[in-house]
Length: 240
Image (tube, rainbow, N blue to C red; front, side, top):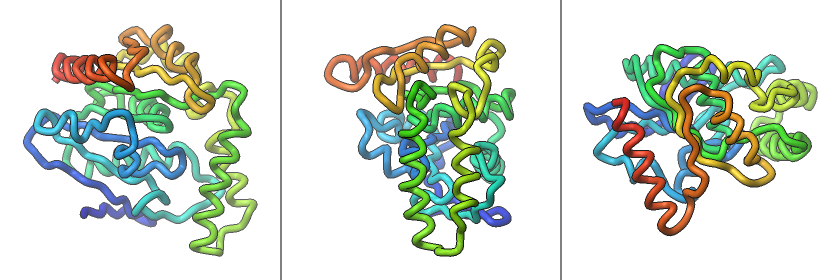
C-alpha cells in the first residue's frame, strides 16, 4: 500500500517498482476509476506486462482509496495534475500511459499538458460524446451520491458545477477539442469501443485525426484477445 499526498489530495497507488520503462495505468470506472477495475477488464495490463514494464496503477481522487476535497471549480485539470504529480513524486520523467474508458481523455489530457514526457499512449475503448450526455450525468450523480453520503457537507450546487465541468462541454472527449488530435504526435494504440459510453466513432476519430495512431478493432475474446495482447506488447517495445 502506498499513498501520495499533496495539499488536499491523497492518492492511493501501486508500483511494481522494477528498473524498467514506466507505464502509468488509468483505470476504467468513470468517476469511480480505481485500479481494482482492472480486475474486471478483458485483460489486465498489470498481468500481461508484468516483468516487461514498471507498472504504476492509481485510484483517481475520490475513487477507491484516494480522497480529495471537492469544489465547484474542479474538473479534468485536477485529475491531470494528480497524475503528473504522482509521476513527479516517483521521480519518473518520461513514461508510457494506458487508459481505459475515462482513462482515454486522461491519456489525451496528459499528452496535452506534458507532451515531452509521454513516450506512448494505449487507449482502451475511450469514452466520448455521442448523444449520451444524460447517461454520463447519471453516472456522475450516482458517484456524487456515494461521495456526498460519506461526507455530508457538499452542497448539490457544488456537485452540479463539478458535473458540468466534467461532462457539460461539446468536445467529443469532454476535456479537449477535436483539433488537438491533428497535432498529437505521440504514438497511440487505440482499442475500439462499441457501446453507449464508449462509441465506436470516438475510437475511429482518434485514428483518423492523429498522425501516429493505429486501431485494433477486436481485442476482448479468444484469438483476437491473444493477438491484441501481443500487438500491445510489440507496440510498447517498439518505442521503449
